[in-house]
Structure formats: C-alpha cells, structure tokens
Image (cartoon, rainbow, N blue to C red):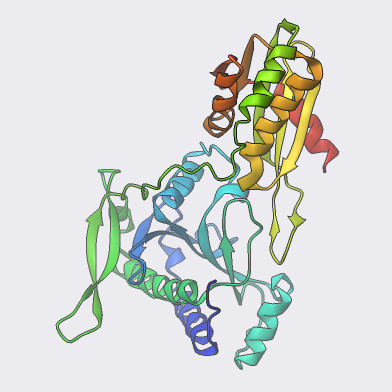
Length: 341
C-alpha cells in the first residue's frame, strides 16, 4: 500500500508549483516541446508536456514511462488508439479556479497555511491512470517526484528559452532528459542527456483476468452446435459512465457481440478493465451454448480483444480475424453509448 505524503512533502510540492508558475516557461515552450525527467527513486523517465502557450490551460503533465510517451505523441499527432481520457498515465499539475478544487485539496491548502487568489491561480495535482477518473490524491513518492519534475522543467525552460526548437531534435528517437547521478559529496546532482525511449519493462504473461478454459464445457457446447453461419463482431471499449467500488471511481469497459448481417446485439457486458478478457470469453461461450450455433468467422477490432478471445476461438475451432472496421459493431456501440449517456 502506498504511503501518503507528509505535510512537509505536500508543502514542498506546492512550493515547486509556485516556482514553476513564476517562471512561466509556457511563454516560449509549447506542448510539442517534449523533454524528460528521470525519477531518481524509481529510475523511470517521465516525459514532460508544458501547457499554457495557448492561453487556456496552464501547468505541466508528466507522462510516465515509454507507454506514457506514446500516449502524448499519439495525442499530438492526432492518432490516439484510445481516447486519452481513459488511457493516459501521467501526473498532472494545473493552475485552476477555486471552484475546480476537490474539497480535500482546499482543506489541505488551508492546513498548510497557503493562500491563492484569482482565476487560474490555484494549484491542483491529479493522478491519471488508464481506466480511472483523475484522482486528487498522490502517494509520497509521486508527490516528491512531481516536485522534482517541476523544478527540472523550470531549468529546462530557462536553458532553451532562446532556442526552444532545439528540444525538437531532428532524430525523433531521442529526447532531452534531465537525470540525477550520484555525486562525490554524497547525494546526487542533475545532468543533461539525449536518450532514446527505453523499452517497456518485460513482464511474464499472466492469465490473470482471463477466463480459464473449461474443456468439458467447451466440448459440450461444440456437441450442441447445430449450424455454422454468418459473421459475428466483438470488441471492448471504455464507457464514460463512472462507477465506484471502493474509494476510487473507475470507467467500466463494455464488451459487445454483434451479428454483422442483422446488426443485432447478441451479448453485452460491463466490467472493470482487469475483468474484461474473462467477460468477453464468457459472453462468447454462453452465446454458443444458448443459440447452439457458431459463426463462420469472428471479427475483432483490437489486439486486446483478439488476445482475450483467441484461446477460446481456437478451442471452438472458430476462425478469428482482426479487422480495422467493424460496421455492425460501430453502429451498435453508438447506440449503446447514447443509451448510457
């Protein structure tokens, strides 16, 4: 369980935010001038995106790791695979109006003896994680790192004040990075580097969240099949309808199974992100059992949907195809999203 920041750590973060505000590096840096700050504690690089050049939103977003970098690059190029509202992983500092503060934030500011006045003057800090609503509570490690990132962003902004486009290196595979190295006197000192993004950490594939294959059940379902015809389409996507289990609200994922010829929704389910693969497989197998039929092909619209259904599709001797367009499911999705608001 992560440790909450101490009052001293929170105050250090608010002071770093004030220094960033006073430096106003957004006057010459835009959100396209990306640079990185390596977390001395974890070693992970956060890629910094400066907001404020457009005169609407002021602050700093620190996109965490290579996956975070991909999200912001996709946003800047207009080619995100998933709506950034649901998929981004970052620490966000922004200057907002008093009314936009979470009650806990306002209470914290008063307890720390701090005060702000005017529009776009109140610092807010948010943790963005895939599948969850922005969260106003940070861990101690996140608060310390975000304070470091704010201070390093000021130094980067000052360094490139008169030549900001040097941050947009001709070689798109490298980024300007600030990283801490051990010093002879003890502790650490910050240095410049141009580095290519690191490969995401390799993790062992886990079956967590996937539906275990019940061979007896699958054999029984296959024995009951009376026909094979048509094409079914399947995919999963976030729905902007926050749900809450426990303390933190989350965005559920909807899984749809649609008949391509008729546009009929055959099955749908809402689930948490880590339960989506199992929900998709369960819906498919249940549908086969209920209708005693199998399609000639099953089309999926994403790699994640394909990985969730491939083991079951193989067991059912069902051909699975990835398709960039799912015509029937797209119409069904629009109808369901309207229904759920």
